[in-house]
Length: 136
Image (tube, rainbow, N blue to C red):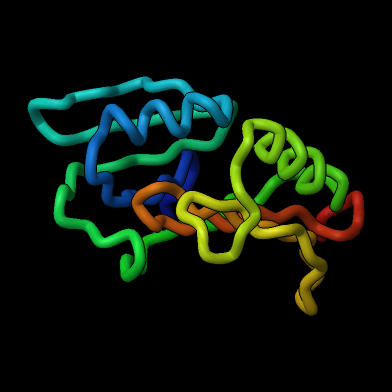
């Protein structure tokens, strides 16, 4: 039996207490809605090749939710740093107790330059690019 190739996008599905507020938050970060179905409780936002899905979950506790995703960027460490700087310029807090917030970039033991974004609903979006300019 032959294998079917996995092509296309993989998109996380995360909770949103209020889809219009989620859309506004991610629009400030450069995402645009491709699908917004408030009556059906669903939202899809994209930026370039990154795609995030949200379902309406009004009882989500942003302090305890365990939803998240990893956004692996092409390019070297400078790419993660540039995106962090872009998103920080929107006024997001780096206070470790704030929600939403950004977590400063750091180099990992597994060879990535990473930072994190916690959105207003507590969803964790970890963002990273390889420390070397070419991926292996």
